Image 1 (cartoon, rainbow, N blue to C red):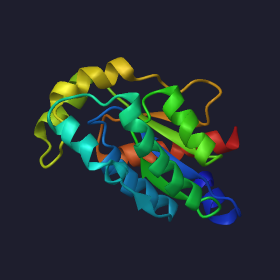
Image 2: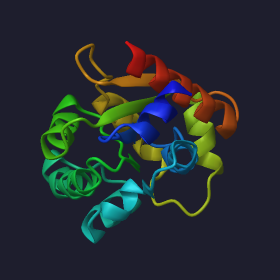
Image 3: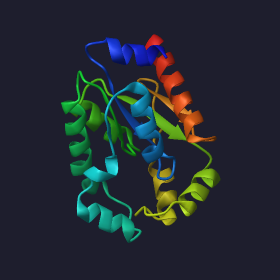
Length: 179
């Protein structure tokens, strides 16, 4: 709860980037976390150019060149929320992607949703209406570079209900703020 109080009392609330491989629940946890923090939420997938969506739908992993405009758009949104706070989802799988977001919006904090590959694959197999096929999960894990010690952020396991995961994220952010 201390992070929530910090977000509500400080003049410079953080923008939180909910990150992780496909299927970890960024689209589910992001809005719940934003509601708990009392800030707006932006769905990272909405920032993708149509060409990116088409490639992923066809089962083709994105290249770094495909991702740069998407990351820049997310960074622009986060920059616009500086001092106001917000939550945005983004896979942000590589350190270089997170560095690009930090360059656009200094002070962003990452919540890395983590979990067992089998659990994530099962969740992906049962979700409906999403363009990302389960076949791309291996490329997501191969690309993933977990948060490093010098990066502002926390890792949160995705086992359990969305409410439990969100509560863990809030607790982890509170610990981060008090460190």
